[in-house]
Length: 338
Image (cartoon, rainbow, N blue to C red; front, side, top):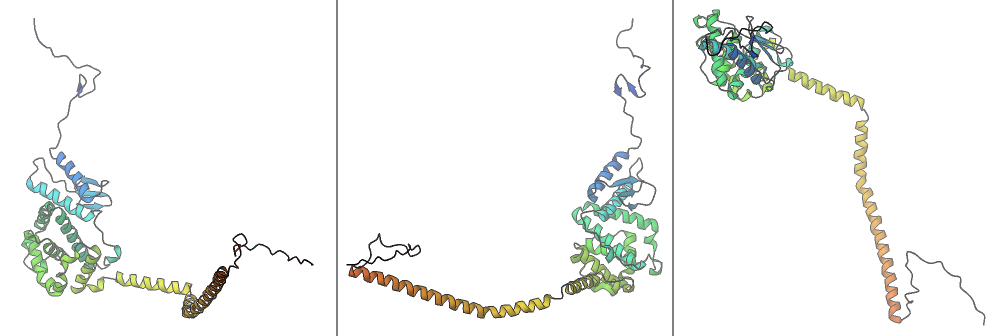
């Protein structure tokens, strides 16, 4: 006879994966899934956008509306390089889409290709530098992303400026280096040094005020446009947005003057009235003073008569005196014949 517990067979009506009322947890397919979920939530917080949709896809990383695409190169082993690359990409995109940071106005963006590329590269470097100020840990992550991108493109092997990337990439790397004070990865540093002499020769005086312009996006936009002008691409900037704002203000003032053409005459009449007011007020003051003098004189004479009457004993009794403000009607005098 066997003793102890015996294994009971599974019931036929039980759903798969469930025995005796308890769910059997399936093991996670990829150990990197918890990391990806945590990174997506952290990215939403950094971007200050809880509605942001974060996905891992083989498509190029970037933003399109409220959707962010991150690289899926996080294997089951989760190497250090893979983790830093994923974090760096997420931090860079979150810094550029942070809703609490003022964004550049469309009027400030140049219409020309080269000028627009330089402007966007400088603006991206500014956003990443400002994010690194608030969260220093993001600086290392973004450095890892830049190192991966430049190594993949072979920037560290370039020795001639003619073969180097366009000026826009070098301008962005230089702004990042000056704003953060951090050493750039090898590939980015190589590209920056190839163009650094030309940039400092053309716009060295303007770049000295970089750190004072980082916090104010409008001032930085003007700063970037000035750098583009110094580099020789001012003809691609289009119309000056500041000048257009001044023109709009002048037009608004002109339209107001046209709508109210009588304002000037009204102001002149008010000025003339204001000039005549002192004379009129002086005359009124004289009249008031004269009336006050007459009233005082009349009261003085009245009370003097009363005082004289009291002294001589000819004053009327109190019952016969009445208030001067309420005089009783006069009674007719009666004449008696003797």
